Image (cartoon, rainbow, N blue to C red; front, side, top):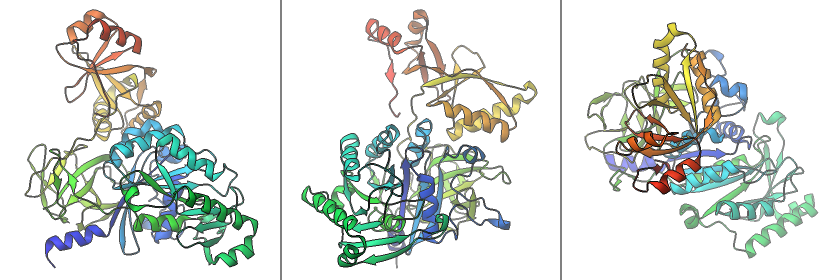
Length: 525
């Protein structure tokens, strides 16, 4: 077998997807159940790590465990049915949508988790818009059917109307929400009946019934499921692979991640339906063939994932070629060599040395202090990939070290957390050395303060977060903005000048009075 054929064969075995949802829809629970069904863990909720520690969960950060929500993305790699699955777990909270966007840049598809009682929520719509902008196929999981909830047919209409994605159910519930008996598999008309496992810690037992057996066992509940499926047939809501891959329709599965009902169906769908890695498009719009020598891009930087290591990990999506640990790559932005002696496959906060990786894989490059989000790495054949966007900040706050004797740690912490994308660090034009923090949401400030204190030993004093309207401007417009008053002028590390307005009304007035000024909206750029 040639090297090119080997790369294509390995890529065909990869599935790289992100899980997205509104907070509390069950995303993290579903992530853990995927690990259970893949055999990566023997008991849901924890992973047996080195020395008996239970630590390699998707929510690895202390603050996440305190709050019970995901505030940072992470990567998990596991095997399932002779495939290699790279699962990218994303924050559910809207305040971390920028981190989610970076993760989606590395995914080939997404699983969207909806709460059957709540349906489509504001963050769901925003996340799907990001998926659509990246042309990601989306598989939908209607979760929590073990609890009272809304009519599934009503939820299908809501998905279609509010996010413009036509749901095409592959499985359909037998029994109403709160009295969930199993699923009707619309592909062959059979029923899968589940028996609840204690605390959902082990796989749910499953029994496949013929239509006749299902009718005898469940009577009216089965009849209602058959009628609902027939109605879906009449309106053409059946799975179409072409429409799914085009991002126009979403295969929908139903179940309960907590009780493990429907989890296997969904994981099988990721392997059977989700696309394998395709050639990545470079910054010039040209696809880079999978068999091209190694290339990849950094989509996330994370420090202190494991306090015992105290290091930086750069998450790299492999786009082409065969990665071999120890190979010397070229760092795209600088042209300098980059050694890969310390390369790992990630499993939450845990890591295992990786010797080989292929298109679609996510590898962690340890002690990668010179890498930044969006950087390309390549072997022999130069490439740059499209930049990963930065969101427009909506809140700003001042920050000072609580202890001036730790100013050095304070400056290092600012630089590190800015590089990770936890917060945007801005500086006032005119030489004021005191930084200004900018964020999409309030919780970013809370995470920043927590990590500065607990990880970096530099506790901070944060001023009150203030809502602001931010526009990109240029040096030619700066004098006019200063004369106009009421506008704060800040600068990013890359030299971008931002004009910060106290309200959108003052911005609108200046635009009307000075149409020649540069005041550009920051839209995912």
